[in-house]
Image 1 (cartoon, helix red, strand yellow):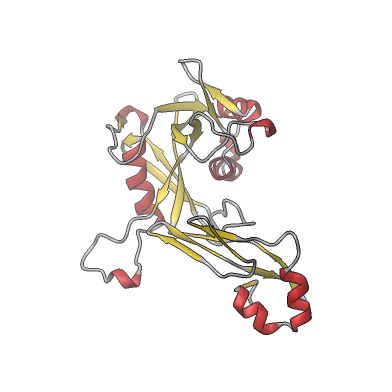
Image 2 (tube, one colour; image 1 turned 45 degrees about the horizontal axis):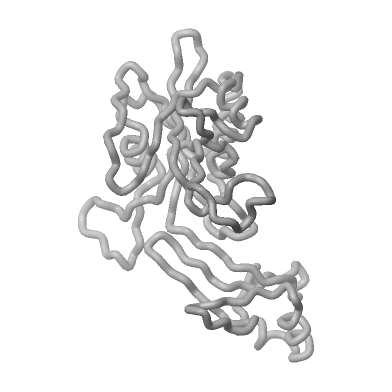
Length: 258
C-alpha cells in the first residue's frame, strides 16, 4: 500500500462517514488560487522545471487515514563538499554565501513578517542538468550522474582545481522528509588547493562570497547558528541539507573531524 494517496483516491476508498469526519477536521489543508479558496479535499499539483508540489493524504501503517500534507517532489539534485588537505594534515572545506529570500529572520517574533534577505553559508548544491551527451529524448528525463553534477556545480559556484579524490555517500540524503519525497546525492571532491581558481560571476545565480573553513571554524559557526562576515553581517549555518551533508562527510572521514 502506498504511503500517500490523493484526496480523490481517499474519498473513494473510505466510507462516507469516515471521510467526512477526516476532511472536516480543522487541521485540513486548503488551497487558494487568485484569491479563490477551494474547499479541503481539493487535489492540486503545482509544477515547474525544478519540481512539483502535490496534495497528498498520508495513511497509517494499518491503512487508515492519518493526515494530509503537501508532498514536494524535486528535480534530481545534490549537495557537494569541496575540500582540501593542508600540509599539517588538517582540512579546509569550501562554502559559499547565498541569499535565501523565502527565509524569515530568525526568531518566532519574525514569523511570516516581511524581512530583509537572509544570507546562508552552505556547501555547494544544485539541481542536476539534463544529460548533455548525445541526443536525449526529453521525455526520458535522463540527468547527470552525481559525479558529473558535483564537478559542474563545484566549478560554477566555487571554482576549478585538480581533483584528487571523490567520495559519494551510499544513500544520499532527504532534506525534509516530512514534506520532500525525493532524495539528493551527497558527494565530496578533494582538490589540490594550489591549483584552485575561484569561479567568476555566475549570471543566473547570486553568490555573495566564497570561504574556506577549517572543521573547527565550521563547528563554531554551526554552534552559533551563523558565520560572521567581514562586513559585520551574518551568514546563517542553520541549513539542514548543507549541515547534514557536511556531517555525513565528516562521520565517514573521522580522521578529519577535528
